[in-house]
Every structure is written in C-alpha cells, then in structure tokens.
Image (cartoon, rainbow, N blue to C red; front, side, top):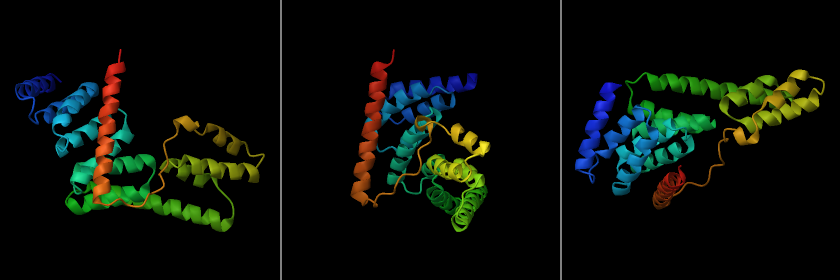
Length: 238
C-alpha cells in the first residue's frame, strides 16, 4: 500500500506540473486501485473535460464507476469507449459485465465472442462463453418445457432469478400461485422476491440501431450527462 501511495504522489506531481496533459489517466487509475474512487472521479472529471476523446481515460472512468457501485453509468461510458474504438478489449469486457448484470445473455455472449476473437490465446473468454451459452440453452429448454407442458415450475423461477429476470420470475410464481394455491413454498418464494425499487433492471427493449452520427451524438449526450451529475454531486456534498 505504501508503494501505491508513493506512485500516486508521483503521478499527481507529474499531472500538476502539466495539468493539460493526459497524466490524469494513470493518476486516476492508481486512485481507483487504492479504493479512492471519489478522488479518482474528480481527477477524471477535470482531465476528460480537456481530453473528452481520450479512450484510456474513458476506460478508467468506466472502471472507476463500476468500482464505485455505479454499474449503469459504467455501462454508458463503456458504450462510449466502443463508439471510439469498437475492438477495445477493456470496453468490450466492461460492456459485457453490464450485460450480465442486467441479465441480457444475448448481448453478453456477443461481446464475449468478440473478445475471444480478438484475444484467441486468452483462455478466459472461451470459458466464460461456454458458461453463458450453457445458461442460455438451459433457460431456453426450461421455457420450452414450461410452454409445451402448459405449467410453470420453480426451476424456471430459479433460472430467471439467476439471470436477473425478476419480473419474469414473478410472473411464473403468480401462475404457480393460481395452479397451487395451497403450496407454502410458492407463497414463500413470491414473498421473498425483491421489492420493485431494489430490483436489477431487466434487459431493455432494443430500439432500432442508430447510424454512426446518431451513435456519436448519443455518446456525447451521455458523457455530458455524467459530467453534470458529478458536478451536482460535488456541489451538494457536505
């Protein structure tokens, strides 16, 4: 830890000596590694205001937001990274992590497939892909069996919950409650579902794809919104 603090001090001196440079990127990344995410975000806000197209800075921002427990914003910045550099490994991984968090297996698999193509010697991506494809196949089979059989099962509920599809799980449990009104396990599971405000958002409806200009404008808007949110947070902080 002492070595990390020494490196932070050195990077801060370099950045303060040249505030218009990109020395803010390694400084922010070291602050993130030290768990000082609030400080890292302040550094990134200032640095990216001067270098909004710095892909390495955006990657560091996405990682820092994720470390700060702000995965939705992290995913937005990862999308901006991929707008600038579609084959950026860190951007693809961050986007895939957000896909998995939302339970969007199709999008996650797509990103991991690209990672496996770009880094064929990395054994991690094929292993992740295999697991995700197995999950997708299991879920599809369970859904098909439930549809063919005309009844819902607690196994299907478990699969939905594992993938983050809380609303689907609730719908299946509601059907089970009708089919099995005296089943205490069904009532218990229904009551145990997270409250609406605590739920992980489900995969959104996919809008028609934007053209290059539309994607660029959307990315700029998302980045501007993030800068404004951080500015407001700093103003209202005690």
